[in-house]
Each structure stands twice: as C-alpha cells, then as structure tokens.
Image (cartoon, rainbow, N blue to C red; front, side, top):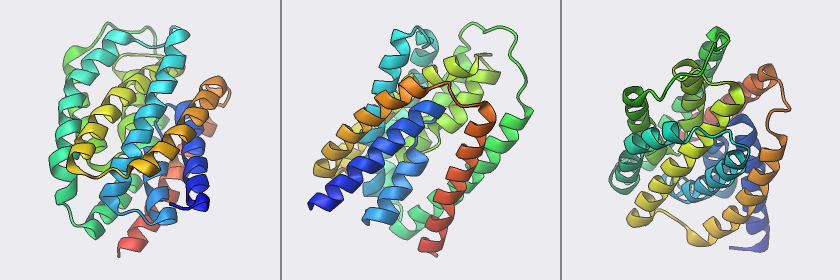
Amino acid sequence: MDVATALGLFALAAMVGTYGTVIGAGGGFVLIPGMVLLFGFEGVEAVGTGAVALAVIGATGAAAYDRQGLVARPVAGWFALGAVPIALLAGWQLAGRVDSDLFIAVLGFLLIGLAVFVLVVHSRRGVAPEERPTQRGPLLGLGGAIGLLSGMFGVGGGLLTVPFMARVQRMGPHRAAATTAATSMTTGAAGSVGHALAGNVRWGSAAVMIAGAIVGSLTGARLAGRMSERVVLALLAAGLVAAGVPLIVRAL
C-alpha cells in the first residue's frame, strides 16, 4: 500500500467516523462504497476490512456517549444478544459465497431502499412522550435482522436502529443515536471476527482506517446534536442515493 492510498483511506475513515457518529447511523453506507469505488476493493473485502473500522467508530462513539450518560445499556445488551451471533455467522460463512458483481449490485439496491425507508419513517415520526422499559422481544428480533445486514453488507444498522429506538423504545434523538452507537459497536465487532475468520480483512488497510476512524468518531461525538433533524435526514437520504447509484452502475 503506497502513501497516497494510506492517506486516502485515513481521510475516508475520518470523514465517515465524524459523519456516522453525528447522525448515529454508523456510516457503513458511505465507507463500504467508498472503498469499492475509490480504492478498488472487492465487495466482500471492503465489507470485511470496513467492518473493523466501523467497530472502532461504534466503540469510540459509544464510549463518548456513555460518559455523557446517554446510552441505555440494557437496551443495547438485549439487541446485542440477537445481533452478535448472526453477524458473526454472516461474515464468516455467508458473505463470501455471493458473486462479487452480484454482491455490489445488491448492496447498491439495498442503499436505495434504505434511502426510501429513512424518508418514509422519519416523515411519520411523532414526538415520543416517555421512554419505555426495555422491549426485549423486539430488540432480539431487530438485532438478528441487523446482524445479518451488517455481517453481509456492512450497512443498515444505524439507519434502521435509530428510528426503531425512537418508535419502540420512545427515545429522544440523542439517546437513540447514543444507544445505536453501542449496538453498532457489538454488531461491528462480531462481523469483524466473522470476516477475519473467512480471510476477508486487509489488515494493513484496516490499521490505517482504525486511526482515521478514532479521530473522526471523537470529533463526531463533540459535534453530535448541533444539526437539525431535517438537515440530518437530508444528508442521510442524499448519502444513501449517492453511494448506491454508482454501485449499481458499476455492477451492471
């Protein structure tokens, strides 16, 4: 890996760390396509290597949020029970079985679908009256679904989990983002282990991206909450479309 590539990967991870921590959605939907389109990673290698950086983004952001008392630990724990084994299995046994071009095309369409989901769900969300006790069954179920998405494609977790926390747990936006960062940490770590076992991680690239992710996620934790929800929503949808369309064009 040459110096220019290393600096590029560092910058990409730092940008995603800042962005993903601020919006509470992890940023995998930017990181993985960026690795494929800008640095020539194969789909499954991008997911495997990116999963390591995303786990660090989640861990750094979750630690910063937890120091502020914003993470609902029991909620994150029950979510992890559903997500961790599925994410590990998906990264280890499933992701590498999909043809590379098909993998990239499916990822592109998944991002477009998530953009529509984000717009629809956020436009219907009302003001939460009071936070609910831990909803164990729904958390286990969503955790399993997110574990599959995250382990296979490295995306989807925060985009689905933040509105879930707002609707089902009735969390405010900052607490939902903080708790989602904690769930992203555990799910990303499990997916990383699975991809490492399958040989899908480029460790040299991962080390550079970890450094960038730490810088970015610490910056994002300080900036969190300063943007309006409308701006965050627009950035989410635009980012998903901008990342998804080039992947579909590349694969087809």
